Amino acid sequence: MGSILCHLPLLPHDGVPMISPVPKADIPNPADGQIVMVKDDIWWIRMPLPFRLNHVNLYVLRAQDGLTVIDTGIYSKQTGDIWQRLLLAAPFTDYAIRRILITHHHPDHIGYAADLAEMTGAEVLMSQIEYEKSNLLTKMDDDAFANMMFSRYQGYGLGDDALSALTERGNHYREKIEELGAVRYIAAGDTLSGLHGDWQLRCDRGHSDDHIGIYDPARRIFLSGDFLLPRITPNIASPLGSSPDDMLGHYFGYLADMLTWGDDWLVLPGHDWAFHAVSTRAGNLITHHQDRLTQLLDRADQGPITVKDAMDTLFAMELNEHERYFASGEAHAHLYHLVQQKAMIAETASDGVTRYHLA
Image (cartoon, rainbow, N blue to C red):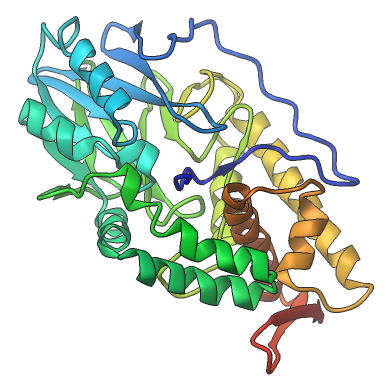
């Protein structure tokens, strides 16, 4: 069974060109399970993951009082073994870990936070919304999680095979995370002390509900988490366990802001490599999602469509159960955005399936 990693590769879909990756910054990537120095106060760890997206980037920031770890990897024996080894070498033997900052609630970022906090005595920092979402999903038993997904998939128009697979999968979220105890809430506008001045915090909605990004405006360094990646697009999906929201609209707002930043920032992302082209990448991602919306409008011009129809339009390949989870959420988010933009109308029929037609 898979885990909620909440990313889709740039899968081919008819008529829409793939987004070209942005060039790498002149910084060597760490190998799996290794740590490299980026600046005298910044280290970068590449933590392996057992999925198609096979790693997550973690960062360590130095302040006067010690270290802040940014994200932790999933909960697994492999992750624990790597952390045990890392803690026996610099910078961890030189400075104590005082804080563990979690950018958002997805397991590859939060999964090992409880264990790392217990090992080091560090406090855990995260936004209240992300903590509450993680707590909600972690406490769901397999039946409750399956029932939540069954209702969603049924409304999407997915077939019996997709529905029956839900009972076999169970709550895959809590497999890759240890439940957190006490955390300290942080929010947009807060600062994080660093060796060379304060890091600024921002919170954004789109890929997750209240994702934390960290930036140093004086040195123009941005830890973007999962919101701005150099090769893949973050999964923009309708939220689980809460009311519908225009997540794509929120993400468009984020990307519009990134257009004003320019291309001279050093971006340290949650996956893949470091890069500089903030505004270029944001512009490419805007075009990518606008093209997807156009595809759905063209498909709906032939008649009402379901989320399943939208998935077939946007992802012209056979999807496994893990990929179906992400693709369905992303297809729904795009249709929901078109409804919010008054370009489409959603109507739920007596069979429980929602169909979308042009306004």
